[in-house]
Length: 387
Image (tube, rainbow, N blue to C red; front, top):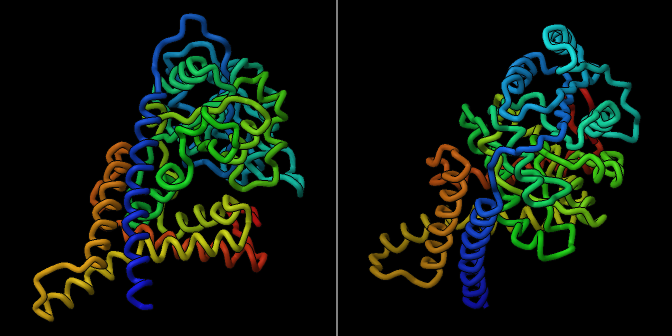
């Protein structure tokens, strides 16, 4: 019986490795194929919408990056979301320098039924005049082609929503083993090639750092009010729009903007953990399945392989059994998968060779997310409790 279970485990290890590699490769190719970049002759008005809560360290760089865009017809709207720092004063100084181009609004108190970012975005929509909206975060820095890239992709695909990965800056080791976790969405979970082939909303996703929408479609859909209760409002926004019959597209926006999401490991853990349980629908059964799968098929193979190789050498055995071969196949394919992801996302590739630490880190963050959510503790983020 023990031998039978080992053989089953070995087969699953190989299947998981092949799955990760092929899934990642197909999504990478799909993103590359769908991404376009060209200048528009007719330039409809774009409203750049930026919510800002306690962003005095970031908001200046964000606004500056929008002041020299190749796309000419746009407005910049910033909502100060009840900041307790100098965010409002910094943005106000720009509205005086660029009257009519940059507009600043004060956010209303957060209603109990809303998440902070969604409520801030919904308020901005009411002030925006553009035919298209670009939702972005205050801690992003944009290239001069940022708006042009968004517009060329949303119009080329005749989409109602377009989003994609932007560039990610990581400096500390803690950031380097945490930020790559966001790429597991398109490495293991969401087959982008099914987005246009299927009406199922689960095949659609978005990244809140960079979302472009057609204003008329977005208002007809109902805006952020449709996802006001979600912490991972970006993913659910794409899903709900697709469910409502709108077209969503996911492309590569690494040349449009960059972001340093977090500045240390503790902040990275809190930032990612507040999203994981919410992304899984706050389903404890699904969370348990995910945690066990990560442990047995993504983290455990590496240490098991080292143990197996040591025992073979210790026993002077010169051939590899099927179990050891399956471990090696899993490790090689997982490493290659991470390498592809890191190269295409322009992330330090050395982390690909220590990917078990990334998965071990994911286990820790998932458990933190699960336990805190189940206990009703939630997470304090930017001075607010997120439950």
